[in-house]
Image (cartoon, rainbow, N blue to C red; front, side, top):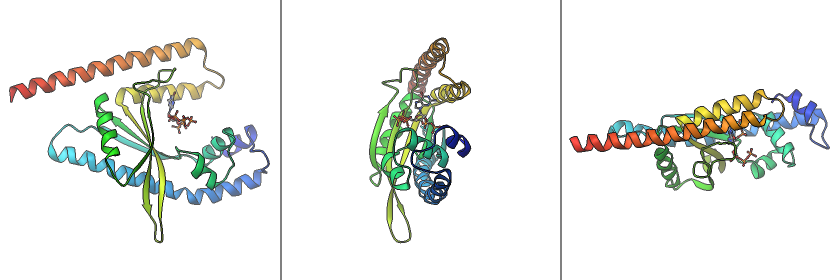
Length: 226
Ligand code: 0O2
C-alpha cells in the first residue's frame, strides 16, 4: 500500500504525516537486517536443494521466493493491530516482515523440509502453524514457521525473525490467485465467490493428494525394477 493511501485511510493516532514519513525513513534503514535474515535462510534452503541435486535424489524444494515487507505495509499493519509505530514495536510485535516462501513438489516434501529446518541448531523455531492439516475456513493451505536466525554484524549478533511459508505448487497456485482476487475486490468478497474459491481449494487439495499417491506408486515400481 502506498504511503499516500495509508495517510488518507488510516493515519496512526497521535502522529502527523511528517512524523510518520520521518519514522518510515528511519525504519527503512533498520530493515536491512531483515534482508540479511532472508539471505541466511535462503542459503540454508539452497544447500538442501544442492545436496539433493548432487546426490541425484528427489529434491523436496521446487523453488524459493522471498520478500521484505514494504515499509508502508509494516506501518499499516502496526496501525491496524493497534501497536505503536516504531522499529522496537516492529521487532516485538510483527513476525512476517521477512518472508520466505518454499514451493515443494508434493505434500510430504513440506514436512521433510520443515523437519530439516527444525534440525538446524542455530535456528530457533518460535511458531509453527499447520494450515494443511487444519486449513483456514476460506480453503487456504500452507505450513507456516516463524524462526529466528542469527545475523552476525561487525560488533554484535542479532536474531532476526523470518516467516517461512511452505506450500506445494498447487497450494501456491490457489493462494496466489485468491490473493489477486481478494485484492481486486475493494469490499467484502460476495458469499458466492467465497464458496467457489473454497471449492477450488478442495479440488486442488484432492489433486495434490492424488499426485502424491501417484508419485509414491511410481517410486515403488521403480524400486522393484532395480
Ligand atoms: P503478504 O502479502 O503475503 O505479506 P496476519 O499476519 O495478522 O494476517 P497471522 O495469523 O499473523 O495473520 O498470520 P498467518 O495467517 O499465519 O499468515 C499470514 C500470511 O499468510 C499472509 O501474509 C499471507 O502471505 C498468508 N496467508 C494467510 N492466509 C491467507 C489466505 O487466506 N490467502 C492467501 N492468499 N494468503 C494467506 P499477509 O501479510 O496477509 O500478506
